[in-house]
Image (tube, rainbow over all chains, first blue to last red; front, side, top):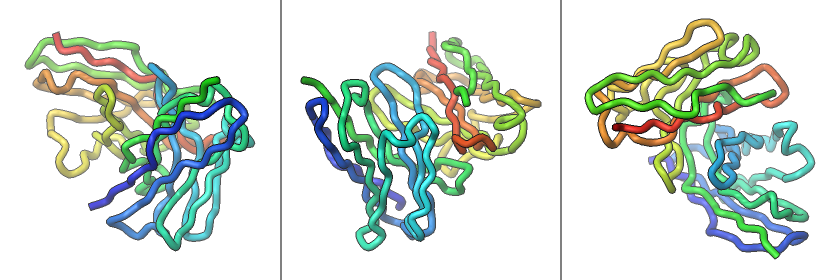
Length: 118
Length: 111
């Protein structure tokens, strides 16, 4: 069974850094793209970017380029999303997703709620 | 690259059929057969319901079906049930720099 298990909820202050994680299991982690999707409170889904753990090829949506960093450690089947300096507007639920093909998101993690507040 | 356009809300009575539209451009919906649909209940992660325009993953009810005409894709839910009340999002691969785009989302209400 394919599973994406994300790290727990975070409460941070503006300007702080953060790295959240997503551990894949039940499939070959290095053979599928892993992506991140943002959902701000009461809003829709926004695709942020993807990484191919096999060779760390990474692509970003222009809206998120330079705002976040996506990485992966294939030795522990884990992908990451990190911020160097959080803003209040980063408050959202973040989902990691598996792209069954680069063209389709087929599995979702349970989500990590990030709250940024002074 | 803007989000794909969906109606904000659609409603129907139990047993009826409803259709949700998803309008994009020739760079996404119209250019590829890579449209997917997701169902999201409150407080839950989205779930894949349709992929590649009209294919259902294993375990998804055959009451859900997808189609596409030009730059508009559609999701039809037949025999509407109370459990179908949720938010629905379309998505598409896109040739633009963004690579992947979601729709604006549609709230389905079962009357």
